[in-house]
Length: 261
Image (cartoon, rainbow, N blue to C red):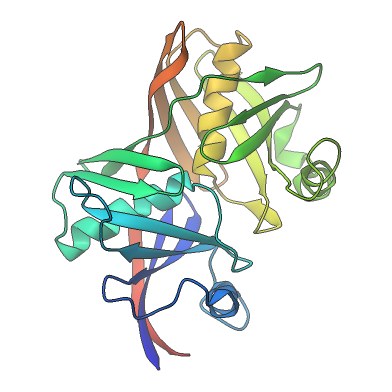
């Protein structure tokens, strides 16, 4: 079979995207998804997404996301932004979108080349002596470091990712350094990719909320610099937790191609 695919990236977080509205691929074909994401023997990507028909009347489409290892994963923020841009490219949506992903319903707005993706509400942030833990659609460990440019993200992230208390289930690991009042730098080790990625949308969201929670910023509009570019997170803090959380940044089509599989 010859498969048509699209390659998208959002601040360097790159994805293979397939229009699967006609169910040309089975979601159980994990070996194929892993091969397509392989950077030496396939197309190469941090993850793969299927755009599928909506399951709910109010939705425009359904998002199905797989990590680079081929396994279906938890929510991917940058992936969600890229899929919204892809849906606009296909003509499914214009400047607004509603879709359902593994963590529930999302709304998005496309405005002047940026995708504003509403993330799930966050009610609980666990604070420990040297780190925080929260779920922003995916689990995230957030830890402050110094001299982030030279930090050993791969080895330290790998150690934390499967160590106590995460073990087999694992957690994404974010290392953060403050730049100024409302701006932070972050580098992320992602489970499923098992490496540092240039950007992680749910990780950036986790960092922004964590910095506010620990009073390292008083702003509710946070700029986060990743290795692949700048993202912005806006939110409202309420008595129930964090609401109206938006992940904002670019999402670009890199190329379209065909591959035999």
